[in-house]
Image (cartoon, rainbow, N blue to C red; front, top):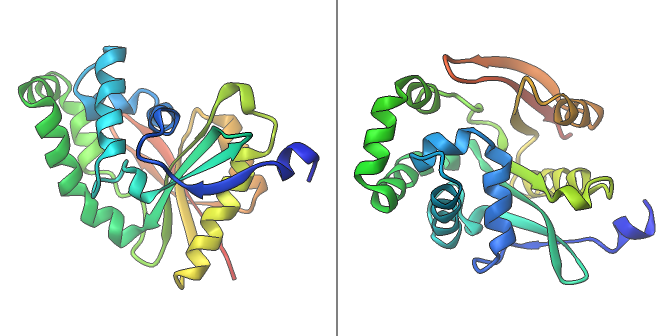
Length: 206
């Protein structure tokens, strides 16, 4: 571990962190459009800022940790037991509907395949601790932030009594797939939906 990596600390996320909210959005890439009900940058960003600041939704600071160095947020991860992830599905949708109202419904009706793909997606098994989103700022890549965040999430999993950590990765995201595979994550299944194609990956922790 080099000195730059040593300077990085992982802390509980701050509700006021604008960077944390942006990293959540970055992690989802085009999947964020379906959730926000828009492809307009300002609307998508505003929706995810509201989710980040709120509680009891899967994109909340409540379930997130930030990688910081010199007082700046460089990376972010959300993680929770799969059972918690499932419990948050309905509250997350209700908050999105409250934020976006009819615009979300109208967008969903125009993009039925994306909506169907999202709501029928099975991301993990009940005995797994799950990494929901993970991202780092482009200018901080190469500092080992992704590896540090993953290791931190795995520590959280072990502390909560889990022996397996899981995540999903888009099939086209070769760089992320190679990182996860190098760190011990193996493909356990595939998610092939009309709008999205992902690998399910998991790692045994003990």
